Figure 1 (cartoon, rainbow, N blue to C red):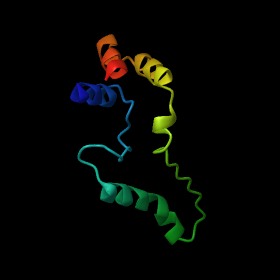
Figure 2: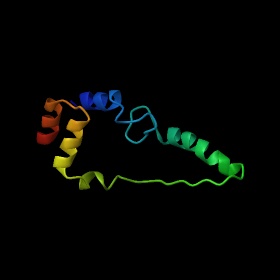
Figure 3: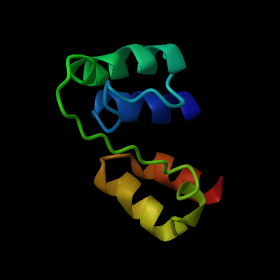
Figure 4: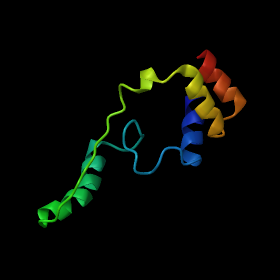
Length: 87
């Protein structure tokens, strides 16, 4: 079931290509290399603003019913939503 959920999220572009956390085949090194594209202008003496957000603590704070509604609105099948609800 986890594979089916992951495939759905990837195929429906819920998880973007630029996402690195908990994504199979991507690592912190991929993230650093990509981030270098952002920092290069700084090396060239240009101004750059960067905002980093850490949502790791927020995941457990999302009310379960809101999470289930979001999964349904993303097009996840009723069976999978039911599995998440009872899992």
